[in-house]
Length: 154
Image 1 (cartoon, one colour):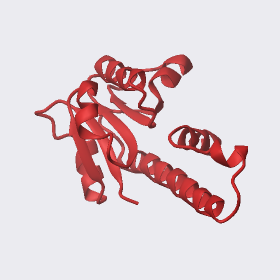
Image 2 (tube, rainbow, N blue to C red):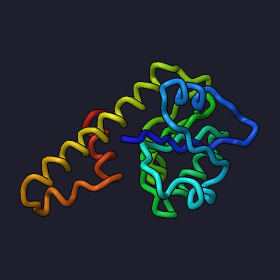
Image 3 (cartoon, rainbow, N blue to C red):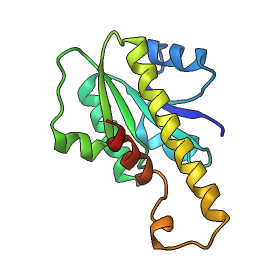
């Protein structure tokens, strides 16, 4: 599996999330605005999206991605105390709001959970190829299935 993480961050920012992702050997696809998504990421396998912008701006960009049909899970990096309602989380696909400065273990723990969800899906698809498909098997498509697995873990 080629592990790409899309990072929405300001052009002059080389924040801690990007450094941690790169140190883990993940490829970071960086862009400043959701509108750039069409040029950067659609042809690549993506694990998740990380928004490292001021919280309201990051939330707005994640919602813009959802409006474009991008359903990958997201982590929002925000100032301490920033809280999202359950509805806001659902609308933006946010798994977690990580306060700045981010706790590396917690951040990488989420990355690990997303990788595990992708691995589980790959194994399920591999098993499905070896037997006739049915309606339940075909329902396990990304990224909806990634969200379902992560909710079950969380």
